[in-house]
Length: 242
Ligand code: UDP
Image 1 (cartoon, rainbow, N blue to C red):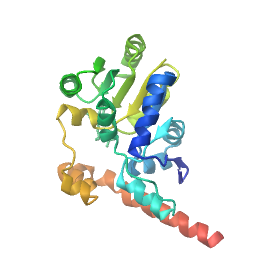
Image 2: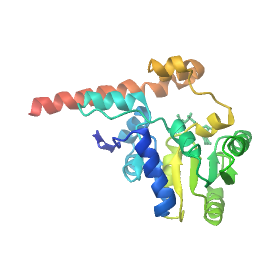
Image 3: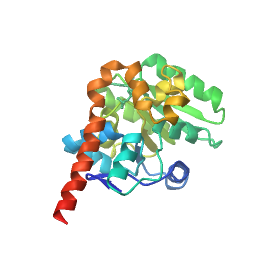
């Protein structure tokens, strides 16, 4: 569906995994998946390059509760929330042998994530990894390494919008594989960050848990209600016109 000009795919977890699987094993040409939440969407409304990047993806899975709420406000409810970090872990946990490249997070975190993947998913191979704190001049080496190793899956966890722009800017340089802009997923796999406990997830309060854990995110998180207000205004303006 279209949310204020941003394409969000109305797809559930099962079909997202199916599409990713098909791209990795049958298609093989380079493709990328983004995981937009309300904050990323709000940023895309201010930044045309990010908007273009999002709309160019193979799949935009609805990552957060804010996007689901926005779709309800626009009277075109999305099927379900597909959290990016669960999606990636489900993909790794499918039982199918494939190779992964990890790009993002601190050096210690990405190294620990690699080790945890090898323990938890023994059929997966990690073809390489690199922390997410590199200089522009280093990007070519990273891309060259990815092209030499030819991983099936490239997990890019650089935070938004850095990861979306990195993937988009290099979409013609990376030759194969499926990349996913995965936010803090590498930190979750390494254990350097924790997902919100079940209570918060069940009551749709993951955002509140994040706020308690990282109060400095407060300003950024104002983008969530702002995005919902924008959607409401859009509906009211459309009603007036009709
Ligand atoms: N990160 C990175 N390089 C940067 C900035 C951030 O690798 O220049 C990593 C950071 O270490 C963390 C992830 O990106 O692992 C950010 O995760 P978060 O869930 O906070 O993503 P966001 O909500 O910012 O998209």
